[in-house]
Length: 214
Image 1 (tube, rainbow, N blue to C red):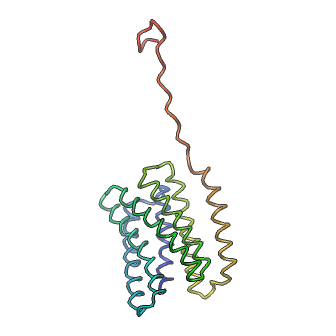
Image 2 (image 1 turned 120 degrees about the vertical axis):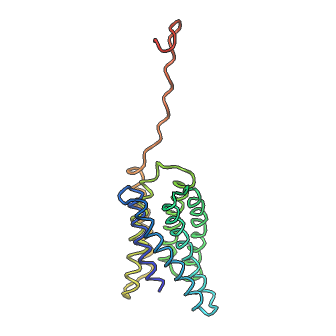
Image 3 (image 1 turned 90 degrees about the vertical axis):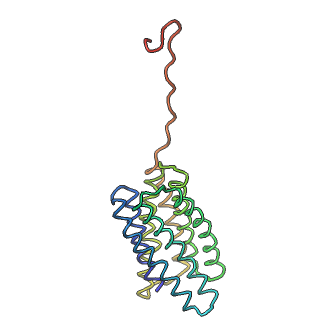
């Protein structure tokens, strides 16, 4: 069931990336955020109930809420025209929490690919914090590209491979994901960000010439 939800996380990340790139209208994207946000709240609730107190199963399901609440928050905020700083600082919380889930994937669950994937998500939500929380809009296009790519690489493709029984070779997969992320996101950065240009000082009038008549 979690893999089904992950498939649609891929869809909403791709859509939100396109929204940040000004390809998709924000209000149109908001509706799909609500759909996926609702799914990502219902799914972990069911998994926790079905876990029968199994701490590892509960821990795995608990991380899904981070995404569900993000998408609900985004969807409602876009439809109501709310300020984005709330989503931005919640994204900072998610980025930090994702580091913990990455550690747990590596050390507790012995799941190296998702240890790397959680690092991907931590990076993306940190970008959401920079753009929405700190207002650094010059990174908007970069964040849009990262979100759109992560929608496929960290969610849609892994979900489809898991659902079809083809999610194999965890060590090779983890290394491939890590190398892909570092190379692609590093290459994208200079192509999608514009450095802030310092404002040029106003010309000073020459001695003896009134301002505005130089």
